[in-house]
View 1 (spheres, one colour):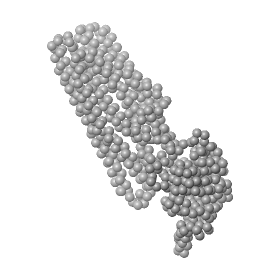
View 2 (spheres, one colour):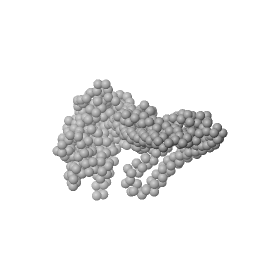
View 3 (cartoon, helix red, strand yellow):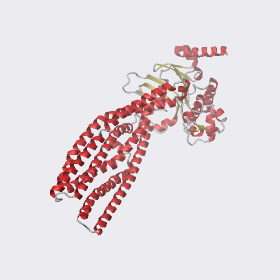
View 4 (cartoon, rainbow, N blue to C red):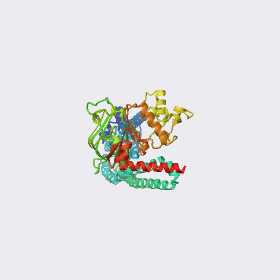
Length: 583
């Protein structure tokens, strides 16, 4: 895990190495200052001249200035290193997610990935900042102060060896109790973010059903869950402070009482006032460094769980990869399914697709129809290798899809999925997702083919109209038509429309199909639809049922041979006739 995260330090290695070195310089200066002060006190007690006082005063000022310089410089390099690590982690997580297959993405909730890129990365950033500064400063301060305490106080310094194990044992017990709580709380963070995400995404539904109170209660429950776990963890962590205070006051009482007794009885021979003052200073240094260490351990405990969650994302390897010598040219749009079986998970008991055998000629128009859950979408997702087949093979252009370079294959297979997504930006920017070099004329032509130009041209800003996040300021039908235009701009050898005209009226649907038949005759077109009217003019129609191909044929053939197709056709036409009679 540490090795995985350390890869993200990269260009910030110099700042990461410089910080501990500068911190060490700061600690050395701070630890020598009490020693010099002790000498100065003894010199003043002996009746030294003003010149001696000035000399030691200048030394102290220089050392304090150096300590300040080292500290400020360390703070700057520490900030650079920790913020740089956070930036690289977010970048690496995002790039890693972009390389995932659908199978990989299915393992993580969207809200969980967002939490990992925000809260978890911030926790790791804070812990890294503490590690390269405080976690270096505190042990160094502890060691140097302990050595100097022995130099100045002799046997009295052994009190620290008694106190340190007590603090260490208390700290270990606290961490042992807190770690499981932090592990549990991050899962609840994911649930909290999921609640917020669902609410915002479905705001129109929430308001239309007047469910604000229900959503508020659901959110409050998730927030209270997180609060309860954090409160429990903080209460346990709070035990550090009273334990530390007890040790500090115990050391002070011992040093003051035993030190004063030693000064009086030995008449300053075994211990003098200067030594006693420096011993007190070193005791504060040691115990404050222990307090810093306890804070560092608490943060590392919290960040440890965050680091594991980040490492999970970074170490997740895509289940899809390019072969050693990939094919980069797709010859044509022919498709062949050979004894294809498919399931979404290796552990799944049931196959989603079973023994699929199908040959589609290049340029052919194929309709796919079937009931909900008949695996229509699963079938077409295998063509562009969004998933790999479990058994069998799929060939595109005469080659197994696993032989192709993924980017080359997907550039030749345009898919307009069921859930149409538009991104924040202008209509032009969204259309250029299909072809970033597309000219205005090409975009207009694609929009005319998808019947999108008729409403885009009516917008005041035309193709420069800004699309809100998720396409919130256009209708479902308009969104579908823009997504079809975007796919057409790819000029693919295979075009797949996965129920992507469901929000479009039948007249517009017919126009789109006619335009595609005229303008892209050599492109293989696969149309998944719920309406028989959307596929009845296809060269062949595939009827899916329970993950299998039930029937294949033309509209006329299926009306005779397929009970499923006939039932869908009759029910839809009956509904349309009834609506016409009502009108």
